[in-house]
Length: 428
View 1 (cartoon, one colour):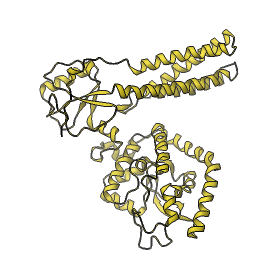
View 2 (spheres, one colour):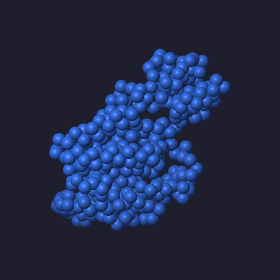
View 3 (cartoon, rainbow, N blue to C red):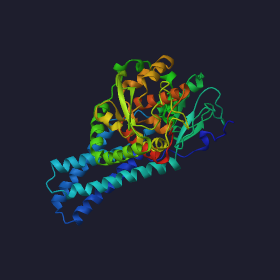
View 4 (cartoon, rainbow, N blue to C red):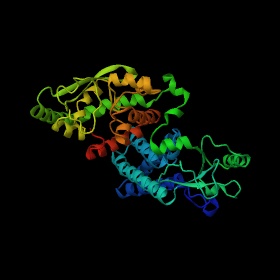
């Protein structure tokens, strides 16, 4: 059923104050609080002034770092609300450590202020999206003055508005125009698009917006450069390896006792062997042996490799519990230290299945451009797969991860992984 909505002319309100300006005002307010706090703690005016200069310099450098790394995502236009405080906080600590001469007091004071700054920015963004979502005008064949196409994906931060070129409207009434592929635009619609470009109204391709809302890439729309790995370069990949090793080593005091407890549980309930080794396909298509706690019967693969099904009879009672809360994956941190896996990335597939998928699914081998992971974007959104159709859907999530590889996405996956572990989502 098509949805009836008001036309743009029914929304006479103008553009709101840009979120970056609100964030700038917040930064100036926190700068004043920083000065008053230093004076209240007994700092001399000259010392407080020097610390304030470093704080202001950190804010400007943080803004410069944020502005110098523009996001490719359409829905990340308010990224400054969380990236500016984080960048400024890191720069402030470095400046106070290298240049500051008043001890650790200004640096310790900057930490809670940056935390307040970051938290307030997130609250502003949530409030803004709830009470003033982006108004996206929809163009294309068949779009009438009070009707919208049925293929628009719902998103809490957007409000779709059909745009009729025959009606008068102001650029201030829309935040973006959505362009749908395959639509044949008449001359009056082309003039409207040109007017939007002149008045700085962003043009959003529907395919890219669908990708950001769903978290999946349409395989048939992947650009030709995806066929050549030489075009895929991410400076974050090298940093990610450092994070993997550091995080694993720091977590060893927790991982080792937990893994020992799981090993004893498997030994007492299922006997030996405690560990299960299996050949998987890693980065660059190179095979490696993944290690897990054994959760199935000893002869589970006597008939050859097979997908784990729901209520799989091969899974032991203890194994079902371990798989539900992903405790069987703990030994894979060994694979992370060896460089065969990452903590976050596409899940490695069995060699036999990977060979079949490469023949039946276009571009399947491209998921091997990055290290496979213990957890990944497909796992937290889809769970495990057991057939070709689900694997195709999983590939769309994997391509999204490869395309948007970043620290922000990895942190989001960590958060969703914790929710997955607690809820047992997708376990088999």
